[in-house]
Image 1 (tube, rainbow, N blue to C red):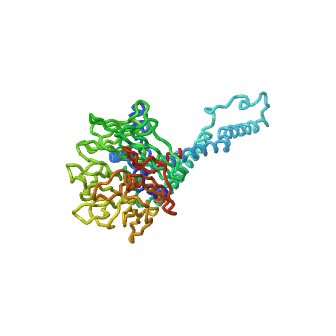
Image 2: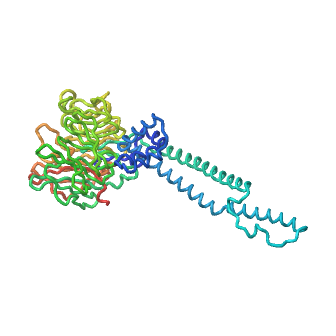
Image 3: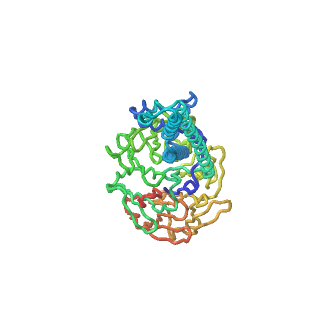
Length: 538
């Protein structure tokens, strides 16, 4: 995605206080998989094997089942615990099978001992009694029912010993693996994980995905006559791939790339007010996965499968993109434009029911909205990698212009730079700014001591925007800039005084600049940097 943060891939995912409860109720949470997809034919059988729980634990299981699809930390914790559980079970089954082959048969030993005992008895009587026929024990088959009671008791003791040893091994090995897994999990968790939105597309993909491989940038090209095409460019070799066989409608809105970098979400609003939602991975029955009257923009959730959709005057819909199954959240509320999501809060730009143009957040489980920033029309908002701050460029009149940092709960705001526009984060999580200074566009590290990383991004350019810029507006547009996840590659669309445009790929370490073969600046055509992804690796 665009400006993806590095640490959650390399070190893990953010902690969740409910992860411990997920481990505690591991077996009971298997019920979630049964109930989630409405598999009524399996519910009865599952109830028979369901572990006995207290009323409090039953309520906790229901809460966790609703919580798991939105929490990457708990999902990964539960998946790892299930793998460990299955490995333990396979190990015990294999151990029992191996021991059964190595330990001599108990029944055979009892039969042999019985035969020797009876033979010795016959031998003691043969001295005084002539033998007229073979001993009965040698000619009559011996069945388990005919074994002496002492033999049966010995057999039972042996099996009880075997089962006791197996149970002890299960407890010891399982506990060791579980505590080791929990220790590794705690040590691997970074301070926090960034969120996702169309502009601030900092994501929370699975920890197994390496950020080093995100070299492709997705650019949308739209025109009223030709519709919208999605071209994916490999910035290393300028190779491109069209991701849609048929152009999307000209009014299609690109909502963002999935956290794992392998899917794209977009929507289209019809004249009758109905909105349909689509992904590149189509459903079998129809192309779109959900439709709703009055729908707004959407955000990917960290599971790369579910999305949140804003519905005018009626809160949110949490929708499964593979099945179309939807859950209504925050019914009756008007949230407006969704910006990004960080569990359990969704951040949004307010509408008429709140201070228009200010950023708010609300717990998707319910509650009242919290104002995070003051009214700041036209700003692009970025959540810091640790989730504690929201950065934005302020051009209003109530306060001095500049780049501001607000605490994520809105309790404190301070100006951190006199000018610039946030464009993403460096490898070490430092905020990066684009600034116009002395007629040149500069990339600046917004550290304690600001540092100019690149003094002239696009020599001769008068704007980093697609199209004309209004008088008095800073000619820097987020939709025309894409900083790579590790901050080492920059893609910008540069506009010139004569009306021409170029799209540059810039190596931030060496300063090397190359042209990207994009049809920029065509009459009636708009380019939009959607974000970074891994789709060209497939």
